[in-house]
Picture 1 (cartoon, rainbow, N blue to C red):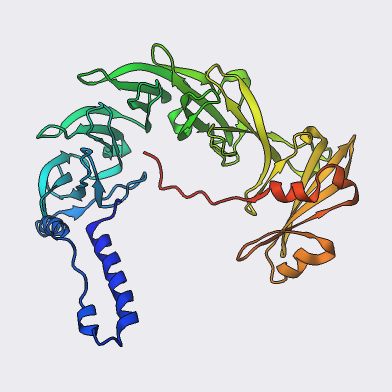
Picture 2: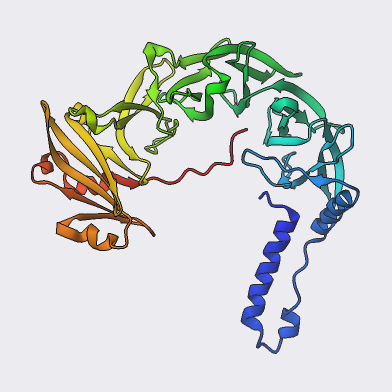
Length: 438
C-alpha cells in the first residue's frame, strides 16, 4: 500500500463521517462521535514531515512511472514493516533534491538516511532488489539541466546510502532475462549519433557491472515504449517499440544470450516496418505470451475508399520464429474491436462512414473489382441511438453511457460470419491509462 499519511488520514476521516451519519440518533452518540486517531507511528511520521516543511522543504513528487506520491510506503528490507520515503526539494541548497527515508521504530518513525541530488526534480522512482541481498534498491530517474535524464541506483543496506550506478538513459526495465532468479537491469540510452543503445547490467557479487551493449536499429528520438513480456517458448524478453515522424512503427525484441543481450527480432528484419495504430506489444489473448501488432491494409478495390488496417498479432520465440495467433480490426475512433475470422484475409474490404448519429463500418466480400457488403457494425451516439440500434432486426452488441453498438448481417453474409461468432468476436476497447514510463 503506497499512500501518503495525509491520504490515509483522509480515508479514516471519511469512514468516521459515514459512521456518524448512521448513528446520530443513538444514545451512545457522544462516544461514537469521536473521530479515530492515527496509530502513533503515523502521527510520528507526520510530525517528522511537517518539521521538514516548516524548515523550508517543499514536496517534489516523481512526475512519471507508477509511483507518483510525495510520500511512499515501501518495505525496502523485506522485514514486513514498511519504510516511508518522502520526496522533497529545498531551494537554495547546493543539493536541493532530497529523498528522506524513515524506518519504523516501535511506535514511531525515525529518519534512517537521506539521499541528496543536484537536480530539482525526479522523473520516476522504482524499487527493485538487484543484488539479491533482500533489500530493494531505489532506482531514481533524475531530470537534470537541458532535460538530460540520469538513472541513479541506490542501495540502503548499509548505514549510509551507496550509489551503485549513475548513467544517462531514456528508458529502463528491470527483469530476470537470464532465468537466474535475479533481476537484470536494461538501460536504453543514445550514442553520439542519437541511435538507441541497450546496456545490460548485472550484479557480479561486488557491483552492478556492464555485461553487454548492443545497438538498436532506430534513434532514441523515435523510441516510443519499452515493454516487458514473454516469448512463445517461455523466455523473458523486452519489446522496444519505435515510431517515426511519418507514423511507421517497428519493434526490436531483446532477450539474453550466452554473452549478454541479443536481438530476437529487429525492426530491420526483412523490412518489417508497419503503420502505427497506437498499439503496442501485449498479451492480447490472455495466454501468457506477448503478441506484437503488425498491421496490414485491407484490400480496397476502390482507391478512393481510403486505407484501413487489419492487425495481425504475432508471437515470437527465442529463435525469431513467429506465428500469427489472431487478426483484429480496431476502431479506435468509436472504441470497439472485432476478432476477424482466419479465412477473411485479403477476401474482405472495409469502408467507414460517419455522421450526426454516429459511425458505421461495413465489411464487404471482394470479388474481382466488385465488392458485396455482408456486415455493418454501428456505433450510434445520437439521441435516438436506442431506437436506431433496434431498427430492422439489427443485432444489439453493447451499450455504454453515450454509445450503443449494433450490427446488421446481410443476406449473403452468414457464410462469412454468423451471429454467435459476431457476438463472441466483438469487444469494447478499454482506454489505456498510463502514468508514464520509468
